Length: 454
DNA sequence: TCTGGGGTCCTAGGACCC
DNA sequence: TCTGGGGTCCTAGGACCC
Image 1 (cartoon, rainbow, N blue to C red):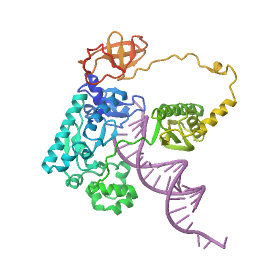
Image 2: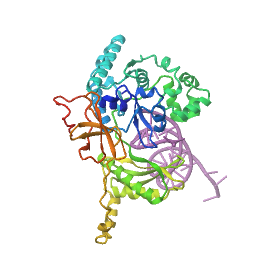
Image 3: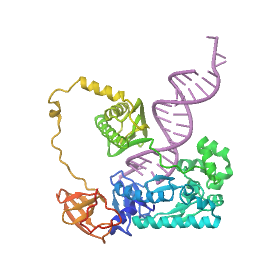
Image 4: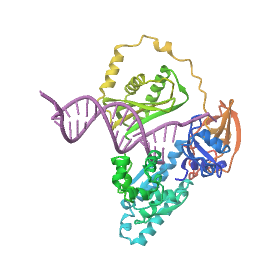
C-alpha cells in the first residue's frame, strides 16, 4: 500500500486530500511513522524525529495513528490477496507476499507460454489494484517476479500506484547497478562494512564472491547476501506464522530518575504485556526487560521460568526483579517488558500457584485496602489530533487540535465533502470518542446520522 | 525539541550433559 | 593426571525491517 497510514487519513478526512499529512508520535520524542507523498516533497520521511518534520513542513497535518482504522483496511486488502492464493505472507499491515502458483491461477500459469503467462500476471495485478481501490479508496502497488526478492524490488519500483513485472532471467541485469542498500537485510551498518571494502553496488557483491562476503559479514548473512546479489532467492512464501514474542514499551517525555517510579512503570508495562499475551491465547517462558538510558544506550535483562505462564503476578514479579538489578544512574528514557519462548497454552503453572498460596497465607489486614484507595480519579480526557469523535448535534468528526481547555473538531466523514470546524470545551458532554468509519460508505447507510457499528 | 514501537534473526560465550 | 568434542539451553547484544 502506498504511504498507507497517511493515505488512510486522507481517505477518511476529505479536508486533508492533496495536503501534506504526517502520522506518528506527536510527543517531544516522537518519530514519523508515515508521511504522505505531499509531505515527502518537503523532505519528511519515516523514522525522522517529529520535531524535524515540523521544521521541514510546518503546514502539514500532524496526526497520531489510528491503528484500528489501519487494521480494518489491511484486512480488506489481505482478503483480496487470499482470493489470489491461500499462500499469503503478510510482512506488516500494508505489505504481503502472494504465491500465485499455489492459488487458483497456478495451473493456468504453469501451462501458459511466456507471453500468455506474462499477460495473465499483469491482468491479475491490475485487477487486484482496481479491487483495492474500489473497496478502500486507497492505492496499492504490485510487484511481480519469480522470487520474493525480485517481487519486493519490483513493488518498490511500482510505487506509487503502479505495477511492475520483472521477468525471470532479468534478475542480475536489474540488480547489478542498484546500491547495496536496496537489498533487504543490508542496513546502515552492513552498508558501511561493504563500503569500506569498496563494494557499493549489487554487481560488486556478486563479483566479490561468497567467501569474501562471509569473511566480511559472517556465515549466515554473507551467504544470504551473496545469493541475493546473484539474483538467487529460493525462500518460499509461508502463510503467517504465530508470533514468537510479545512486548510492550514506552518512551517517556522526561527521563525517569528514581527507582520507585521505574518499578511502577515496569509493573504497568508487564500488566499491558500480559493482557496482549492472553488476548492472543498464548503463554511464555522468558520475561525480558528492556531499558534505554538517557544516553540512548540500551540493555536487556531476561529470566527464563520453569514453564510457560500467562499469569500477571508472575510476569510482574519477574520484571520487577530484573528492574531492581539495573543501574539507572543518569536516567531512563524507555522501558519495555516482553515475553518470549511462547507456547500455545499454559501448562500447569506452578509459579502462579505458589504465588497465590503465599498470598493466601498472609491475608491483608482488614480495611487495609480501603485505607490506601486513591481519591476518586478525575478522568481528564485526552483528545489526540486525528482521533475519531462524535458530537450529539454535529455528528461524526475528528480532532484537529486541543489545548487550554478547548478541543477543535472538524466535522466530516470519508463520504462527505470537506467539513467545517467547531471548538468545544474539552469536557463537553456532547462530545465523545468514536470508532473509525469505513472508508467506503456501507450499503444502505443513510448519511451522517449512521453509526460506525461495533 | 534527536533518535517510536513491535517484531525477527544471528552471534557468541558459558553452563551443562553425554 | 595439561589439553576432547559435540549438542543444547540460557543470556546479552546488535542489525534489520516496517
